[in-house]
Image (tube, rainbow over all chains, first blue to last red):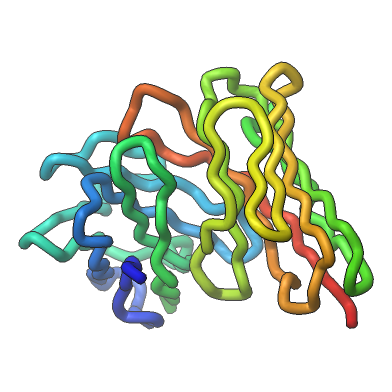
Length: 112
Length: 113
């Protein structure tokens, strides 16, 4: 069964460092998302991506964040200068048009 | 008022019980409703997906949407210990293929043998 895959499963980084979280969405999907979940809190939307551009972003997705689809399969989230409060689970999701969204298993980001 | 409200639980039931999980919402633009199951430190796993009002059944799971009351429910029949997880409701608007999901905080369910 097709699935969204994310790497790495766990990333530890020092405050101020840049990190890149990677995702391979389901191959025939058109819409891609990043969500995050701080421990004990709800899943929050960060950004959506369609047709090689950002289609929507939340207030959380400020200038330190960027997304890219460098080739036909990968979808990345870059955090330029990590802060302690960026520690969270980051989930990638993908969907076809007006269908359910499928999530990856997440990358646990720990900023120390 | 929060957009999506969900009782965090925990909800503890014995094996075999019928479980009722609920969410209320305030945004009348929501048209797509989903229930996800999330195990600790794992990604949300889609359980049910419904459009607009009505019921949908899949095995032991039944999803109900009442748009007039802005209320959605997930029923689990014959609950099993393996159903122990956090259940997230999520919803999105229409006419937007890339419409974002708004989640509830999740209800933790514990099914004891």
